Amino acid sequence: MSEIINRVSQSKLVTFNLEDYYPKGNRVVLDIKEWLFEGLILREKDFRAQLEECDWSKYQDCYVAVRCSTDAIIPGWAYMLIATKLQPYVRKIIIGDLEMLESSLYQSVLENLDVSEFSDKPVIIKGCSNKPVPANAYLWATTKIQSVAKSVMYGEACSSVPLFKAK
Image 1 (tube, rainbow, N blue to C red):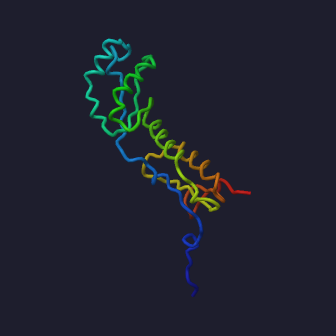
Image 2 (image 1 turned 90 degrees about the horizontal axis):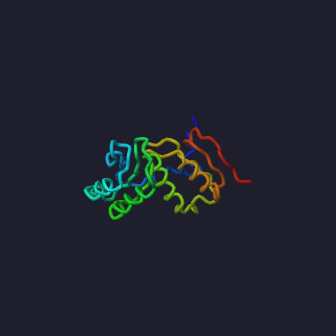
Image 3 (image 1 turned 30 degrees about the vertical axis):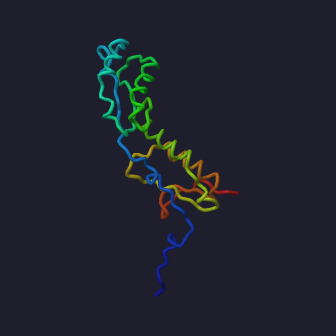
């Protein structure tokens, strides 16, 4: 009887798992509708008073997505003013929702990622994740790794989808 050989473990295939680069830290959505008159109108004096009363320290070391969940028209300076209050406490601030926040975090991580270890190697970008990895992160990882890799695939070693092969 012949021995069973695990060809996957013997291959030079390198797995890139985006979950390994998931930035640790609390994600928070700051909805400013509570600071608006009837949830719709920004009255500058009242808005500034609300900002002064807020305990900004509760956002210590958080990633914050600032948004307004109503159809109010919010002037740009209002978000900028909120940023001045959050800046001493938070790791990152964006205008948007949690998905936009995750995309922004991954964009920063991937822009600064050294991909030289993938040079001239077949790379598989792992598909399944237990953490909220945004679709944009897969695009950015693909383009970054493609610039140096021999080939790029998506999925698992046992069932991958070829995406790119160097000529």
